[in-house]
Amino acid sequence: YREQSIDDYVTQYTAGDGFDVVFDTVGDDNLKGSFHAVRTGGTVVTIAARSTQDLTPLHGKGVSLHCVLMLTPLLTGRGRGHLGDILKKLARLVELGRIVPLLDEKTFGFTEVAEAHHKLETGSAIGKLRLRADL
Image (cartoon, rainbow, N blue to C red; front, side, top):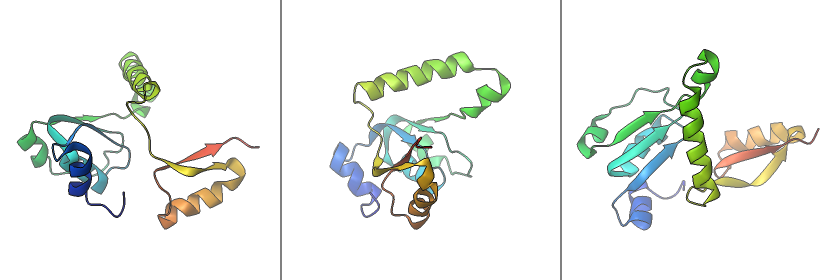
């Protein structure tokens, strides 16, 4: 995914139409790329919206943007029911195989956290890294 342009990726998987839903967990430039990869009338969901973004591409495509700050309901005690409903729907889509996370092939134990962190820092991780409780 690092060698392929967003245009090429969108063309390969959606015949250039864009994705119905783009779920961003990185933010900043990745969030900007999500705006480009979503279809007209689609939805972008981000859990990492700590950057300044030009929303013009969303307006031009009629895209819905959802910033889900999952920690807020835990800190405020408000909105937990709604968050729970969203997470249940998301879990169901994962169970059905409709959402498949991109995970690196290696799972690290807690005793290997430094190695996992190094893999992230060097950019050699493919997708998200997993940690296993091995203590």
